[in-house]
Every structure is written in C-alpha cells, then in structure tokens.
Length: 211
Image 1 (cartoon, rainbow, N blue to C red):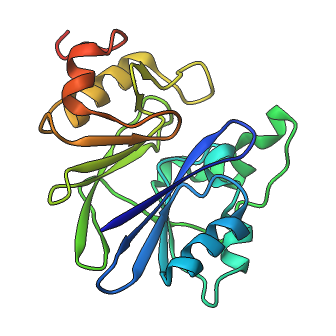
Image 2: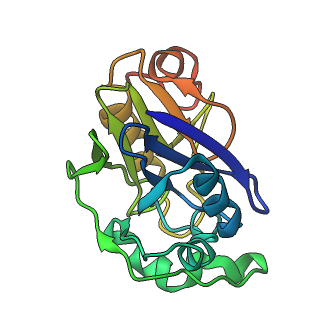
C-alpha cells in the first residue's frame, strides 16, 4: 500500500489518497478542497480512484468532492454515515464560515463494523460520534493504520462546541474505538501530524486511556 497526504483548504485539512500498488486501485479519504489537484496526484501515480470515504461531513472535509468527481472518468461511490447526511445536505455547514460548496453526489450509507476495500486491503469502519453524530474512522489491521478524521489528533482531540458535538460521547468513542487498538497502530487524523495509539494513550492530556 502507498499513501499520499495532501493538506488542503482554508483550515489546512489532511486529505489522504491510499492505493494498492499491485492493482493501482485507490480511494480518497476526506477530499477537503481542490478536487482537481487530488485527481491529478492520483493520475500522476497511475492510480484509479474507486471510492471516496468520509469521516464526517464538515465542509472542510467534503469541499473538494464535486471538483474531484468532475475530474474523474467515472463517478465513484461516496461513503458517509447516515447521521451526517443532514450536514452533507447543508453543504457541510460552510455558510456559517463564509463559504459555499457543492457537496457532490449523494453518499452511500456507512455502518459500524462495515468493511471497505481498496484493492486487496480491508478497512473496518468504526462509528465514532462525539465531534459529529455521524463521525467514523477507518482501520486496517494488516497495515496497522487508522484514519481518524477529527476524533483525535496528535496530543489533542476534536472540538465538541459545534452542532452535533458532545464531549462525553467523544471521550467514549476514543476510549472504546481508538484506545482498544494496538499501540503500534499509526493514526492519520484530519489535521496536523500523524501519531500512534500508544503515544496518545500515554500523552494525550484531553482523554486519558481510562476514566
């Protein structure tokens, strides 16, 4: 597997392109902005984008979908948990921040424990509300990587003061869905640097490994 990280948009959101280099099949996690740029990076690598996975529907995680889809030869499925459909329909809440975006094609429903695939690699979807009711993370056991959106960051956690946020729920999601993973699982979050489950279990002062 090969991973490309692009930091895009007005709030520097991480967009991830991951590919099975044996099949050249790829997926995009959270196309934040500049969809044409995302498409070009994949094209330059010889990758075919087969799906778009969304951790949640805040505007800075979906702002590049429409442009990305328009740049592809075929429209790939977009996956999002149904509890964030309302925010997706509202353009990710972009108007509250002075932006207007096209959220792209209607998503297909994600569910807890659903398995998604990129080439031969399998990712488990974990429903992780708290930052948003429909927030999800994507975890690959084989590669020991997790894409955590805005649930947890390097030495920090997602904000809960926006509509749909809830601090107690966020803590529960982190403890039950992140801190239960092996320590050497690498965390790729929606903003900032990569970290690991073990590092955050010890060093994250916002949510401790146990209450």
